[in-house]
Image (cartoon, one colour):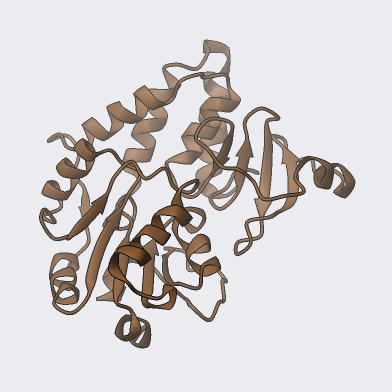
Length: 273
């Protein structure tokens, strides 16, 4: 970790799940989406979502979901190629059929091919499975709720001080899928307003991750190995960075078994400082 921080010149941070923690907002999002689920499917939605949170469901963080085929896809974490495809009940496709449908790299978007990179996507995928057409309005409602007095963001001790110290000798950048209004509100709530010298909002990760990383490398005139990507979403922020020759710090409370020369796994961003 020390060598990675010493050698890095530009540090690219995610926002949600990285600069703050907690899962209550995911549950709130699920409850809002539940309002749009047909009455006969509401109980099944609740059961599936609870199973997802405990890891007792085919849908898990780190996988992908094919909305049109209603298939759950297990990915190689570093290449992001499909290694297994199964239906909602966990019944696996044959190797031949899997290769026929998913031979190349997936083209992730926010409608038909979903990268389940963090807790936001579990209720989203459940909603899509049960026929909800538009999830974004409920996401917006959740983000608005997160800056009310009824919700308390779980701030990570020492993060502002750590970022200020890092900023003395390094460049720090924020790249997030949240829109500019959400980012402004959240950074103010987290006492991180004004800390980043460059912010990219509505980043559309993972579909634009590589493009944005290339822009950052060009903007700061650094080599890929001098850039460190920090985030809690392996598909969005970590795998693309490693594929480009960058370093990465993956925030994983469970500290899963992942090994790569340019990768550090930590429980919390606070561990970095």
